[in-house]
Every structure is written in C-alpha cells, then in structure tokens.
Length: 502
Image 1 (cartoon, rainbow, N blue to C red):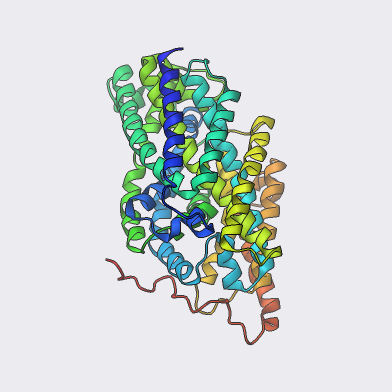
Image 2 (cartoon, rainbow, N blue to C red; image 1 turned 90 degrees about the vertical axis):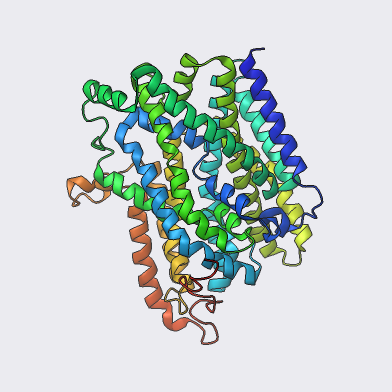
C-alpha cells in the first residue's frame, strides 16, 4: 500500500465520520434535513454557496479546459463574478419569501408564486434532470481523481462505489448538515492545495507564470485566445451569460439560501465570493503548465493529476487527491439531498398530501439510495467531458430564470400557463440540440458566422422567453380575479429592504 493510498483512505473515513457526527442532537424532519432548520450562520452558508466554485470541476474540468482549449477556459471566471452581483439582490429576496412561507425546495417557490401544483411538478422534473449530469460529474471526477492519485492501487470503479456509498450513508443520516461540515474541510484543503500547485508548477518548470505564458504563445500561437471555431467569442459570451443567469437557479442553491439564518450573509458573500473565485486562476495555471510538461494527453481532464504525479511525492499527491475527494463529496451530498427532497416533497407529497414533515423526511431518505444507484448507472454507462456535463446542467436550470424573475414582481405579468409552456419548450430544445449535437448555426443558419457556436442553452432560453410572453398574453384573461398576478406576490420586490443588514 503506497503512501498516497493511505492518505486517500484516511480522508474517506474523515468524510464519513464528520458527516455522521453532524447529525448529533437534531430531530430530522424535512425542514431540518433539507435546509438545516433555517439556522445556518454566515460560515456554513458561505461554504455551501462556494461549493459551486470548488467541485470536481475545479480539479478536472477547469484545468482540463485550459489544457485543451486554452483561453476559452477563462469564461469560468467571468460567469461567477456576474452571478454574485445578481445574488446581492436575488438571494435576500428568495430567503425572505421562503422563510415567511416555510418553503423547503425550489418547486415550493413556484407552487406558491403561481398557485399551481402542475407547475411545481414541471420545475421538480427539470431540476432533477439538471442535477443528474451534475451528480454524474461528481462521481466521474471522484473516480478519476482517486484512481490517478492512488497510482492505480484503487480502481476508478471501486473509488466511485466507495464515494457513492459514503455520500449516501451520511446524507441519509444528516442531510444538509453533513454537506456543511464536510465543506469546512473541503475549502481548507482546496485553498492550500490549489494555491500551492498553481504557484509551484509554473515556478518549478518555467521560472514564473509570465515565462510559462510566453513559451505557450511561442509553441502554440493563438492558444491563449478564445478563437477556436467551436469556442469563438460568440460561444464565450453566451456561455458566460447562460452560466451567470443559471448560477442561482440550481435547486440545491435554493436549499443553501433557505438554510441561512438571515439576509446579511448573502450580501457579504456577494462581496467576497468573486475574490474567492480568483483561486481558480491557479487551477488554470496548472492546466496550462501541463500543456508543455505533459503534452499529448488523450483526456485533458487528467492534466492536473498527470503533472502532479510527475512532479510531487506520493504523500503530496495523496493530499491533492484528498482535496479532490471532498470536492466531489460536498456538492454530491447537496445534489443527493436536494434531489430526494424534490421527489419526496414535490412529487410524492403532492399525491399523498397527508404526509407529515417527519414522514416526508423518511420518504426523502429512502429515495437517496435510489437516486445514487441511478447516478451510478449513468456514470458507468458513459459520459461526456466534465465541462460539457456542467454546461448541460446549466442549460436546463436556466430555463427557470425568466419565470423566477417575473415572480419577484409585485404584479407578475407571467401566467401559470406561460411559465410552464416556456420552461417545457426551453427544456425540450436543450435536450434536442444537445443529444443531436446541433449548433446554433445548424438550426439558425441565417445568423452571422460569429454566432454559429453560441451556447445552445441561450437559444433555448430565447425560445423560452418568447413562448412565455406569447402564452401569458393569450391566457392573461383566464386568470381568476381572486388570484393575483402571482400567488404570494405580496413578497417584497427584489430591491426591497436593500439597506437591511448593511
């Protein structure tokens, strides 16, 4: 047994123990299990929201994209910064209404705002479909990280099974609490590991970041620009826009927002998280260093691990792998608990309205292993590159954005039929374009050449908005006079209470 494998096993055990320990002294009804009893302080909420930045995508996808596509990878920095600006106003508005109405899932929001059970079911299904590739991403990344950093001592299949079992066990026991406590370990590890290797590797091999960039430019002119046919400026801009709009539309992000104790946390996060995201630069530096140090990799997602194995001792490689393990387990736990909550609260309970909060929690816990097995099947059945899996998920959840924003208005102009029709059209278009591997230029050949590779999620979003507006206009007169433009529309508009907590 090599030293790296010992380190990896130790951190697997730590994740399980910490997850189980987090349950102590808590009665796990659905509110406690899924949103932490709405009592998380600033640190936990910060770390849960930061989980979107530092997942297996950090270790594999971001470095792999830099390794394969060069400058195109920098879209990742752009969308996060824009998303946090939006969250300064959006997150407090979501939290206030959710606390008053005691919401525990994202579909609950649409159920109250649009007074429609059917719409909440549509939102639940879109959310689950979006989270499946994201959960698959975590498991796939976990397997790659453990196999590579254990020097093959633990196979990818075995690592995925171990990670999935650990995740499922502590999610069943402690729900969001397990994710929150493991997030503390994860962010400490990630900050230390990513900053260290991002600084050390360019210094060690090239004498600095500037020298590294110069050598890449000399050997691969244009590589550091977003100028590849499939990753041109049209793709770059629309991918930033899609991801920024969809950032807080993920169902598990709603859970993290609901879990907060007050709104001040969100405004602090909006100021500090863009700076925190700059740590991703060190991931890019690692992937770019690998371009010259370990050229010719058939899978760019392996670049960070390949250069780390070439450079560091087994103990350091083991610590890098441990950070990667936590980058999979923390967001994976959030995805599992949120998916189970959506199914239990917004599918099962809709047909069995007599279920108590405790019974609903029991149903959600029972669904965790089922969802885990589905994710495992899809993981082993095959997948796409890690960034592509993430972009597919974003394309789905962003279809919720127009109706979500409209629902914040005191007199929502969007009807239930308009919201539902727009979401369905957007989701169907995303599915067709993605599975058929169609580009915007294929379906809209009249577009300028520079827009032929715009993100297909944006194409679907435009169609979503057009359908939403048209159907809302056609169905506006059918709205009952007793139901306001959005059920529960007395919630403060998005700018209300802007001075609160400053």
